[in-house]
Image (cartoon, rainbow, N blue to C red; front, top):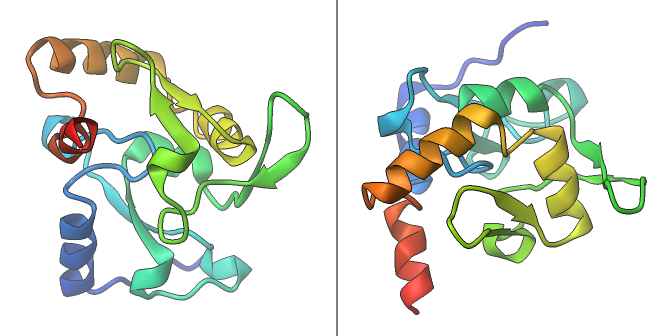
Length: 149
């Protein structure tokens, strides 16, 4: 499989747009031990283009679990549904945090399928969220602002 080249200036725009956070699990790049990736939401192999409307910032864990998947199994119904699309959907409509902001809870079939398929509550992420929350660094700043509104 040939990797599609993404120009540096386009990567910079995507990182800025995502506020340095994975657009799936909301991890912050500044606290990650691995570089984040700019990934194709609809894979090139599935007809996706290399443009702003089809690119998202993803941590290595989410990128690896997602790979070229665009659908996942909703654990409630067992049906395959589209995974969360960061350019077409709002995170807050499909996901919420539990009371201590350590777990992502899927609110919709798409949200639940994305939580399961991308394993958004991986043990290392939950542990990191717990530590960052105790330090006042989680959830990401823009989500704390949304909570105040």
